[in-house]
Length: 216
Image (cartoon, rainbow, N blue to C red; front, side):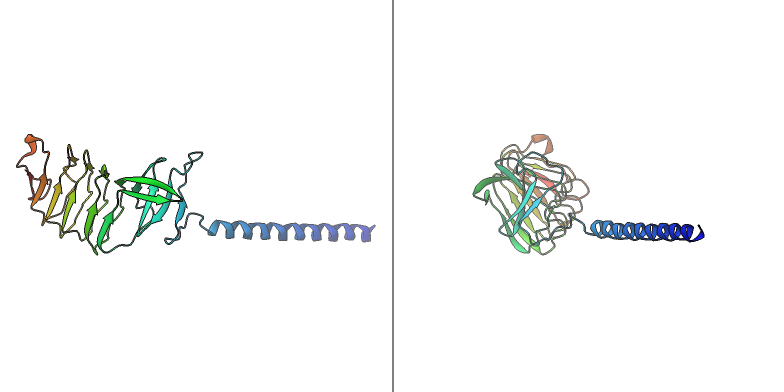
């Protein structure tokens, strides 16, 4: 009887030890998987699927065209995106259209933080199709002067925040609009030239700087 009890006890201990070993291996596997961040994007890749876009085709897809990254907004439009950083310097051109996988897209906007902090970027050519320049899109860049040619374009808050070399911005299209703080901390800026200007804004200064709003 004592031998039988010892046998049962020994068998139970072995089973418990085996179960504990299996649990440890399982936990190690879970920790290793968790340590691999599935959203750690290689900045050199050409396709990145943005999370939270189920059953919407390519909407939210980020791809690279030329030196910039673009995010698909719909079946026909994209914006220059800051979700994947595009490192640029000198002169940067934002085209009217781009192509990806045999599809053509119109570039309609410049997204949040698209070029934020790119202090080696000194000139930008913006296409007429651009309808908005979002928050901090060109913040802390080395731009000196900018022409925004599109109609009905909107320049949002802090779009050009603290561009220390910026002296002048021109809105040459019809019915543009701009946030009063779009050019905050651009202390060298002298003028915001607006072709189609609301008369009530003529001669006023931008928020926090000495730049004057002028019709031309």
